[in-house]
Length: 208
Image (cartoon, one colour):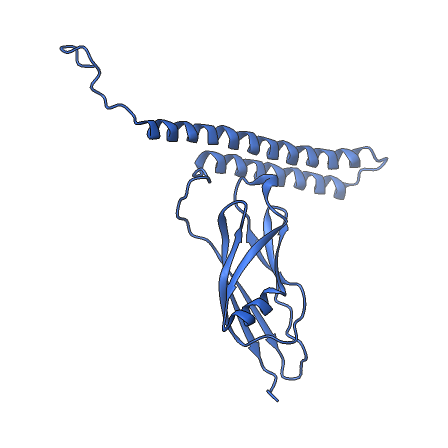
């Protein structure tokens, strides 16, 4: 405040700056509600499972150990969610971040008729998305040709497994094009990538 002239010389925020500030506050409150629901649901499920065992006539030491371990894991997951909420960047902001790379190798033996199934690859899901996560993630892929990429896409799937996703092959294909395929695993409704994808197809069977 300039007492000589009687006015505040601090610069005023623009309308865009005011909106951005309140947007962040709103996002934080919304995320707090979502995280609170997730923590409450997780804790309730853990207690419900333990209470079912307690109602039985016998409550063995192994069952008690399993319930205590479940409660400990729940407490760790709750603490992790709470910390991510406080320390994380609001996920609605377009912030450049590093994402993991999922790798799959599909091979066919010299005497085989089909390519082997790709070993499952677990990919950690995005933080604080809760029940909004889709059951499957999308895959965009490019390879030696569009037809070759489409053929490989027909046997790859990225399915939800709790708070993570699993990349795996849904079938053992008989006809794939040898080469390197690269792409992206992403979510449509969340407008964000989940992981880079590298796939190598190797065929040891002699060509006719």
